[in-house]
Length: 323
Image (cartoon, rainbow, N blue to C red):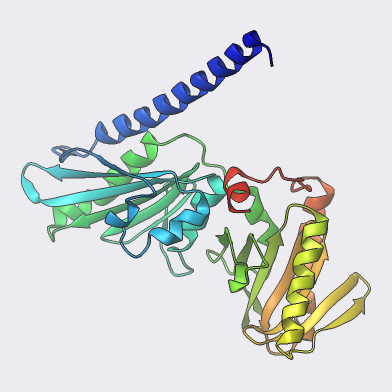
């Protein structure tokens, strides 16, 4: 590399760092200068946390965030001068991507959560609100018991949401689970060990219903069809070692792995390109074929449209970091 090219490279790197630094500073500034409900304002300085001290903010939970490309967290509080003992505290987590932010958020949201208009998706109760937006995950909570304090929760959360990047698009990976049997508000993204198996590196899961019975659907997202095949082979090898007697069943729409999984009862699994689709927690594996067919229809369409094409190493930044 010539000296001129080297100088250009260094200049570009410094410029990129300056832009990133400016964006981070802007976020911190925005969070401390919100347009809040009348009488409310920032209470004290905002604090930032990185991987080295995140445990000080969420002791016991920090390890949950790291696989999702965690970068930093900002903690800030708001209070009313009329009731200084009552506060609304916010924690904003910068994650590796939109999908990573949703992944952390989905650890807290379930089918019974009350969804509200915050960010890409959010839920709230009388005392707390959580939402994801762009590559950020937010927790907003009240302290104290006054009705004024609780009334300020949603306006504060909405002000925080407006201060974050405008992007509210849903991660496209969640579309893979959009089948008729899906139970709403149960989609989750796992950045590692999907279903608790380390050979299933990343993927999405959700609850579904089959003739009124609860089952689990999943889509493992691998980098290439080769790594997807290897992951399925490792799953089969694990099942053999567990004396689960997996078998391959030839169906009109291809070969399907059928097994009584030691953790998930009846399981059907099938590879489609760089993905593995499946249905678990089945009383009888063959009963899950209609749901597997729904998944296959959706996933095959996405693959054919190159929406989630093979990415020979071009995974999201956090995914590359994990591999």
